[in-house]
Image 1: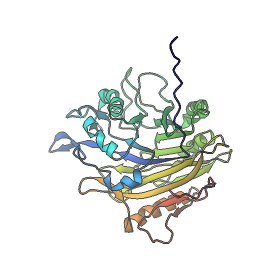
Image 2 (image 1 turned 30 degrees about the vertical axis):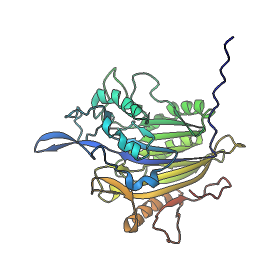
Image 3 (image 1 turned 180 degrees about the vertical axis):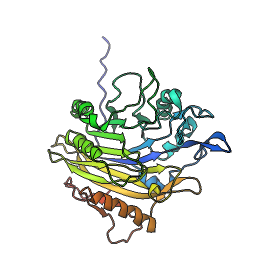
Image 4 (image 1 turned 45 degrees about the vertical axis):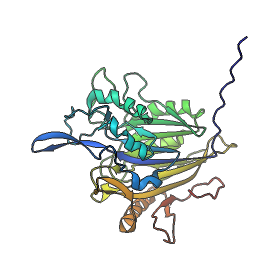
Length: 368
């Protein structure tokens, strides 16, 4: 009789889990010079555009919005007619890995900048590099779904989608995970309800909002709060190209949820004042064995700024720039009833880090 193989032992569950989030990441773009179009990567493959923010990004899970669709080889001309056309190649995935990224959302309005081929190849390019792609265009239903990542014994469910798009795609071709804000309750809540019991964290990553707007639309607020009230832990937004409010929202079960309405740009070929203000949102969750869900232990924002030379890149925002980023986020978040306080109130350190005040806490004094 053949021996019975033992069931694999699941990995031990870590007591805490840290995640970091950033906004729009562009690795390459199409330009026009003297009437001739050409493609240009933001950096040579060996460069590390995230080197200056490595410590701010470092976490168990690092999530960004990949605004440039990926292909194994980028075509010399974009099939898109948009003014802004992005793309990148498989050779540049190492830049994301060197930055520590583990999860990239593909659900954004530039999903069709490399056409159907880009939609089909992009998820495979990321998978081959060891990156977890969420919000990929698909030919099969359901387009809106929970995508599960297991890290440190934690099960994290991501739902990534867009509420706007530059192109409706090709009939019978792959389609973007897309819904209107008015359909969030109808289309998202059943998905969340079915996934809540077997996930430790549920995170919605959404491409939405109005470009360069300081204020958040009322429909966005209603949708985000509805998601948190129905089992979502975090809502992470992007598309406006500027930082918008961070909001603490307590659901009916006394669970602290968090909304980042827009994390702005992160690696992007533009840095004129507001679009150049950026940063890294860091959250730490603590396992609470006596509770059905983990506890949001701390939420911190590391201010950064996009710099043009040598080559576009984010770097920690200090001095006057640090104060500008910090004050912008403090003021916008205060209008949503959320107080952000300086992590170093005495100003003894160069850091302009902010932490979200008013969290219920997890009976832990361990700083991030």
